[in-house]
Amino acid sequence: MLKIFEPNKIFTVTSKAPKYVLALFIVILTIGLTEALILSPEDYKQSHSVRIMYVHVPAAWISLGIFSAITFLSLIGYIFKIQNFFLISKSLAPSGLVFNIIALVTGSIWGKPTWGTWWAWDARITSMLILALFYILYLVAWRIYDNKDKAFKITTIITILGIVNVPIIKYSVDWWNTLHQPASINILSKSSIHISMLFPLSIMTAAFALFSLLIFLMKYNTELIKIKNKGLDRL
Amino acid sequence: MINETLLMNGYGIYVWSAFAFTLLSFVTLYAVIKIQYVKEKNKFIAKFGALNSERAAFAKLQSINKEILSNTSSI
Image 1 (cartoon, each protein chain N blue to C red):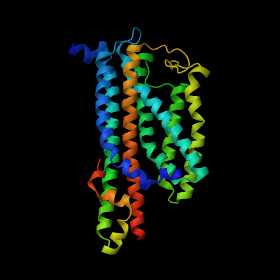
Image 2 (tube, rainbow over the protein chains, first blue to last red):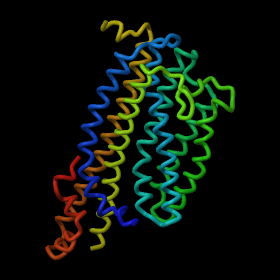
Image 3 (cartoon, each protein chain N blue to C red):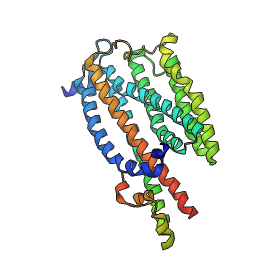
Image 4 (cartoon, rainbow over the protein chains, first blue to last red):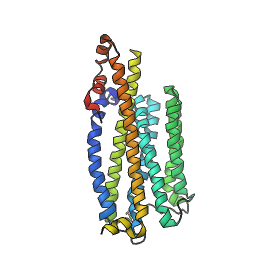
């Protein structure tokens, strides 16, 4: 069953997909930006600064989602010795790190007019910064270790240590008295966000997800070609 | 209308800079990954071109190699 994960088979699809994903991303992003910057209403408390939420929140969600996926794939890959899962994890990491940085920077820009400061050592913000450090550690580990097995082992350990931080990020606003506001969107209970703001937020989340898919595909193809280059050396 | 969209009651500088930073990050990441992709692909084409006919024929048996050499795999 695991043969469907073989890079040789996957490449036929992944090599052709980026151009379609890029086209779809541009369309969705254009709609999202129009909604977020022009059509959506201002907030009664935060005024127009609420628009920063349309880039800050999707970026934070996706960076958390990608790190969780990397951990899951690394762990399964390590247990069942599936090399391709490591390749997928490695290809997901760059967009995860960039979304994490976007979440930190846009959060800081939002903080200045709202809290009166660019930065606070608040539990949510600090735990997001720690996640960025784990992303950096993960990517650096791939660069440092040439030995494949060692790289698999070290990167898996980094993700296992880093995943402990993910629930801390999620529940930090509930566990501690933080400057950061509590979640406005809940899957299990009623969300406090109005539909006129939920719509642009959803569109922007879809656009960001498509961008991370695009980067993933491009990086994955690059990694596969890199492997094939080594294969040619051995011929 | 245009003034209101740009200035946003004094929040414009924060909103536009947040969106500009996001889009700039997207463009930078896309460019970096694209450069890496083109570099690896060119390296592959050069190595493939240097193979003798027997080895090249053997390498072409793998569909992934044919796919990399074809133009369809360009982004």
